[in-house]
Image (cartoon, rainbow, N blue to C red; front, side, top):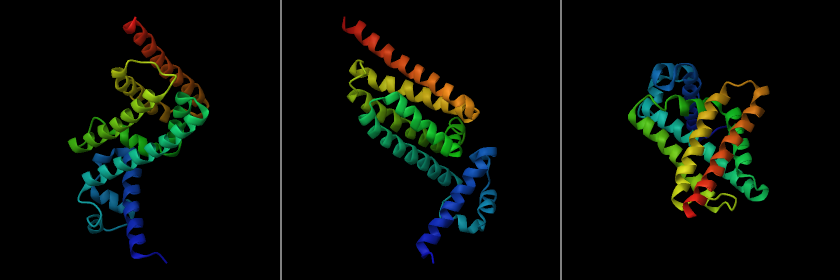
Length: 204
């Protein structure tokens, strides 16, 4: 038998899942509280026991997206240390996240230019965390050559490319995804190769 705290968490997750499911067709900020609670099977008054308003619910979902993807990327970094291919391992991990969590990624990218200012700020903050983590990885990667001040710029270029590519990948048939991964890997490696050439010219 579930404890009171377990039941509360189950209800909270039901509300989050309902909002996420509905957001794939309407967009999160086009949803009403009543739509979400109806989908979750709870009374509207119950919603306020867990969230102040729909904006707080949206921010919670953004946080869930970031935490889940960052956890997967941390595991990927451990694999890179053993297998040695940062680009290939990172792409493989990102594509796995897309396959398992298309609604979460769609939520993250779909409201990047819409919705309340606080929501957009939270999305950009999550994205910046990925940029900062990647910049750190590039700095310690012996195969990456760049000027010290350029690592954050290179990381931002790579993250922008991957996130934009994720939007395209969401709608690709399975048979085309391997070719897409190869194209994305080439684009990322070209960025890294360009940073190396540029660094060499600046130091010459």
